[in-house]
Amino acid sequence: MRSRALAIVVAAVVPLLALGVVIAQRGDSAHKPARLPILASGGAENATLGAARADAALYPYGVIVYKAGPNLPALDEPEHAYKVVAPDDAAIRRLADAFGFDGIAPDGNATFTDGDAQLSVSPSGYWGYTRQSAGGSVSSSGVAVACAPDTDCPTPPTTVPQHPADLPSQEDAKATALALLQRAGVDTNQANVTVDDFVTQWSVRVVPLVDGLQTEGFGTSITVGENSTIDYASGILGHLEPADEYPRMGTRSAIDRLNKGEGFIGPRPMIAETGIASDTASATATGASPADGGGVAGGPPDSAKPAEPTPLPPVPPCDGTGAPTTFACDSPLSEPPLGTIPPPAPQEITIVGAEGVLLFAQSFTGDEGWLVPAYRLTTSDGIGPTVLAIDDSFLLPPPGASDDLPTGKDSGSVDGGAGAGSDGQASIEPANSGPPEAIQPTGK
Image: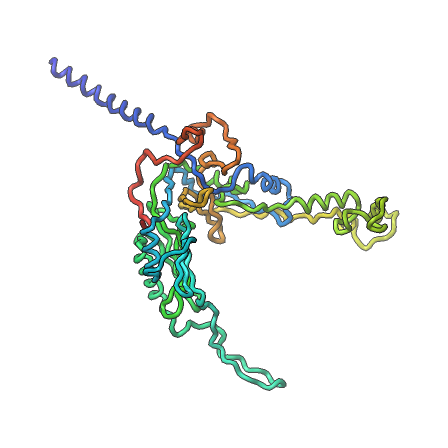
């Protein structure tokens, strides 16, 4: 009887101990991902763009507004980021030898040269190859026929460009490109390979998959010309190391960020120019055109007395008491010009699909790269924009910029303490959750 009671107690205690282990493990998973030092637009730098979207007068070409379509997947599960470790000397040597630069040393700019062929490799792993004598002009099989000036010239048999006789087949061009990458030590087994017809050349694109996800901005492009010669090529050399796992915001939140002009990789140019609008407003106030030299009309240029502004012509009233007009009273041409053209209505585009991808982003210094979670959106017309899937709180501000993130943010964001060194600056930490099941490096 006593042993039976003991067995009951043990049976009750063991599940409780297991539950305690689970709770302890969940408590240990509160690690906040390190903030990434990548170039991405967002926050204060897009304030002018946000104002332009709010004030259509500053956005003269109209605004595109994205909205979520029905059944759009959320895609809000966490996803790993990856650091692209720059290639070492051995990896660069393998790449150079694959292009035929055997025995040739690079110059001070990491450029290999052999006749008209050049290969350059940047510290971050970007590389580019070109041949100065590479062709690329489009040929035509049309037949030139001389005809008299007073007669109709016959139509040539065809004007459709034809492949040169020495151009390899599409499959042979693909095999040539893949063989080159394999000689360079790049794994091409886990990749999407596409071939585009450039008439006189084939363009082979090799885009690697990482943990089953598509990548963007991380592929290799190889142009194969006549006699299976490589004319141009570019890509990124390096191997991947798993970084932290980051919570994704969900596709609907990403669309909201897209409408604010945020969530893009790299610096974004200012779209709305306010100087012209300011000049126009000033000219409207003085009654002169900005082209009139600052609104001064009449008098010599060195006149000490500013001239009176040119008044606008009177507009006939619409009550029948004024001079007749050829415009209807409700016509916009019957109103005085305001100096601006009404913008078109915002264009609304529906996002009908989305997929999670890993987007390549460079660091501030340009000497390292990252693959970060992003969404590749699809519209009813095809591929749409790609936008970051992680919150701005997971991004470090550029050097010299103020970090306006408030302290004490929720558990889904970073408070600046994760990965902080003795100088208070955040640093990139390795993930403590372990690497994903399998990744395919791009060459080591």
